[in-house]
Length: 265
Image (cartoon, rainbow, N blue to C red):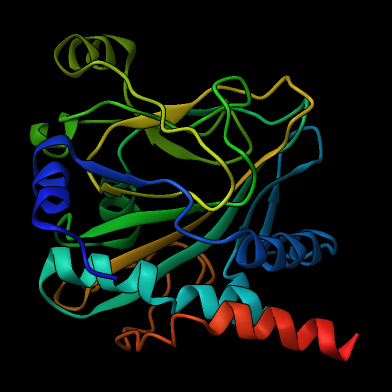
């Protein structure tokens, strides 16, 4: 999948692109089933909220076939490679689950600051590209973005190890307020299958989920091949050190896999 000149310009100026329903219901269903399988066992790659519900499952593309195919899907890999004008590798793969009633916050932050401080990533030539596995609603903790905040570069951040079960380099309230005054806040919402990509320095966060509606999102962190990390401090399942360029699978790979699973059942 190639981005249009208009989409690339929107990414350059605003820092993000949102494509509603980029994946079909059939593709979403096989990914939802995969997520349920991934979150079921106790594994070191699965981080949980303080309440015990799943928060993040890292590196499930290494042991779940549907996730493996998504990690090589052309609708995700090709736009990022196009934006960076070079091949990309997988820096991180995760499913973030914001559970019904108990899903916790993600504080305001920039991703590149964590990648740089914790992994030794040289430049912000990496980004998250995400697929909605559930309907993302204005009420169930959608991801909030501050448009154009990526133009501020990497902003000084504090290491928050207390607020949630996941340590994060976060921004102070005054900084966020200043950026929001300039760019506002947007929260892409829509049906499962939506696709969101955003710049590594775009400021973002999300509120907790106290609704009955879960909100799961798969994130691929794809980095330009020339931007490989240099001093990882986190586990391999969080910050990968396999810098092999991703070779995309066929566009219908998830559909074919879903149908083969149904035929075998």
